[in-house]
Image (cartoon, rainbow, N blue to C red; front, side, top):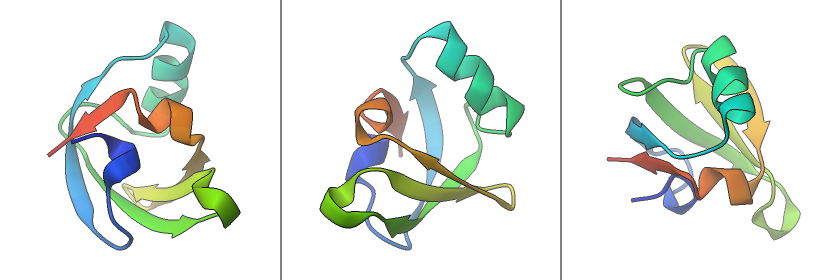
Length: 72
């Protein structure tokens, strides 16, 4: 399943990140890596961007970038 398909207030584990190195590094800086749990907390109007919580840190990601992150 893709991260963009995660339902509100559900938690999942990241299994793959298929994006550019710049975005991978930015995500890694806030603790978003393979094997970590992530939860969808809020969506903006029109569902873009999406706000997530990972390791106690809240952040927003564009839906197009969420389409490149696989979760289970």
